Image (cartoon, rainbow, N blue to C red; front, side, top):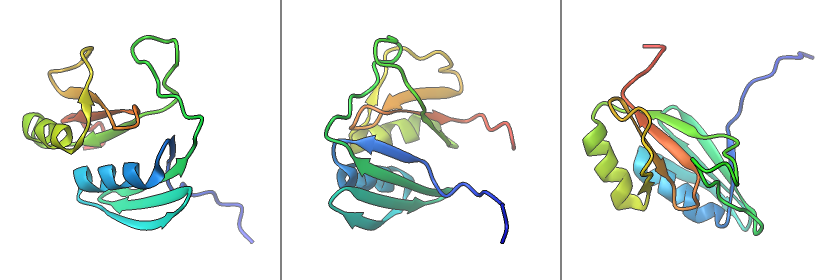
Length: 124
């Protein structure tokens, strides 16, 4: 036996797991690979994301800390403007507050989770 730990995927709570998995599959070119009444999995470039239906889910209110962000997703992109148009067409909302808009844009997915599109990749 090994005591190794490997990250499988982040899991986002949301009001509708299937709908949010479809959103992320659409914007990343991924595919929804599993769905049941409370769980969905999207496999895409760079890995998978799981989604869990939570009827009590409350979206964060960033940048207002009333309901804080506990995590967000970052996506590396080549063209901010083209990718921003793509995620907006898929149902994302662009935040008014953009602290690094020269290289990073902040959006909310349809369930209200913040995510970033960025041309900056510290590992590149």
